[in-house]
Image (tube, rainbow, N blue to C red; front, side, top):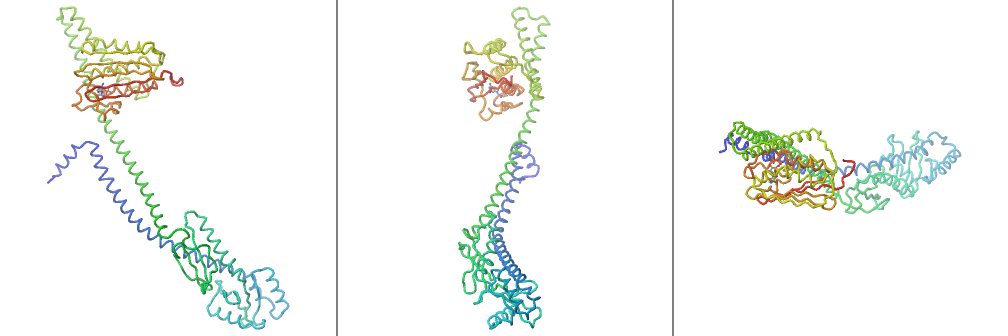
Length: 520
Ligand code: ADP
């Protein structure tokens, strides 16, 4: 069994990257997975509810149609029948005048009359009585009765306020009922519905009790989703509503896919954000680790030249060296080590200037061949001492380049230092300088230990060292290459690396021969 202590130990031994991966999977991916599953379930449920909600919407639409038709009839009755109550019903002349007026101003009215003043009106009377029995009112005040589609046409009745005096009525034209009352109302509502591109086009049909179609705008693709009789007074009319070019399942599926797509998008953004956060945290942690290594690396790097300086100066001071030749050599070592110390400190100071954004460059046209020769000359003693075979291949008559001499010497010097530091048995170094298209190229190649492919991009990062003891145990600050890159980029150039472990490394600097003026 794994005890808590062993578990804690095992966790402590893991690399930060592994810890972050475990944290991300336990703390983030599992909840996200669970959330996705729950979301999927609720979307499936929603898919079913969508169907129900859609039908409810249709039902509501139908009620709106019905109310508007009622309102239309009520308006007509208010304008035509209502005033009859206040007319002198015994004056046939007054009535006739009024009726003629109504017919003139209301083309939908075919006939208007008052019962019992009209002649043979048994059919009208029975229609009125039926409507009264069926309570077919069009208005909320229950003033007007409507009788649709009788053989004689549709009627609107108005029981006169004085019950005994009978009722007034009018017949409406079939054209008005079909084209205006039914088609006009539905078209208006459908137009409003179809104006929203998110809503599916509807197929709407209204038929009477004999299945005679009063209105239809299109055939429903997969039958009617919803069929229902209107309420009174249109109860012998039946409405059927379906979808024009889709069906309800497709509709629900497309709404499901819509929501699922949005969920997936949110998930991708979330996971992307988490991945970026983990990457940034990992980077910060590596940087913090590198900084702490830097302090111990630099201390070691400074210690070596300092102990050599102290050792050789002491030997010379004690006068133990007799031969002039030896003395010269010791002086050379002292000079060399103090130069090395100087270089290390220069690198650190330059790095801190770059970090603070205070590093400036002083550009002037220069002969690159001369700059390289000068740097190489300062290394001659070291090369001879370490037994290096140096090949220089510098193209004659190189065009001048605009550079900061000191910074460029420092960059080349850092690359040479590395070539010396990271070479073992095969001590060969070559420097090739030539024009390459619009650029001047400087290649510094060694046959040293090489850099693993996975580390090649990282070696240019500040503080980064291929620190695995198996690769090398050479001291360094991890700042050399990051300075090289900064210097070359300040010259609008590039520095690249090709390397094979065990075979060597080649750093190539490309400097544009014609630099843009604005940046000089
Ligand atoms: P350092 O002070 O460690 O040399 P650099 O920034 O100059 O810092 O180099 C970063 C790392 O790149 C080194 O630690 C080393 O592992 C690797 N490196 C640089 N130059 C070479 C080379 N010529 N051959 C092999 N490895 C190299």
